[in-house]
Length: 107
Image (tube, rainbow, N blue to C red; front, side):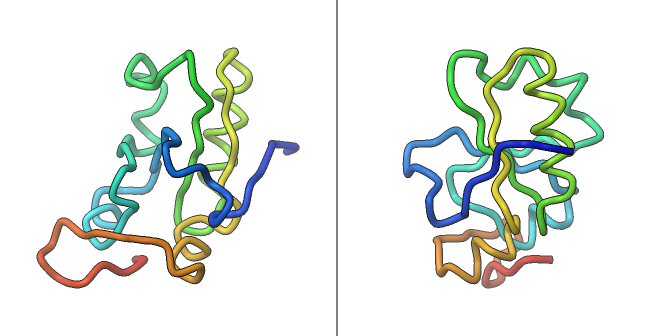
């Protein structure tokens, strides 16, 4: 699968960041500005994804987000995979938040 990819630290600060991980992964830790749509719900909820902006797609390590990126590009959207996923995001020291009341981490 050949999809456009960007390093986590290179994602623009004002980017539309789409997190396609599962609910438990999202609750554990995510980028503060990300939108959460699990991969399994993406086709049904694609109308929630802007069609007039580049979408940066992230998961835990980059596999699911690569699938989502390929599909979004296939249907005519502009999507870029965040290489290495949230593991790379955390390793780069980028801001994270959690929904659990605990310190954020990549589940």
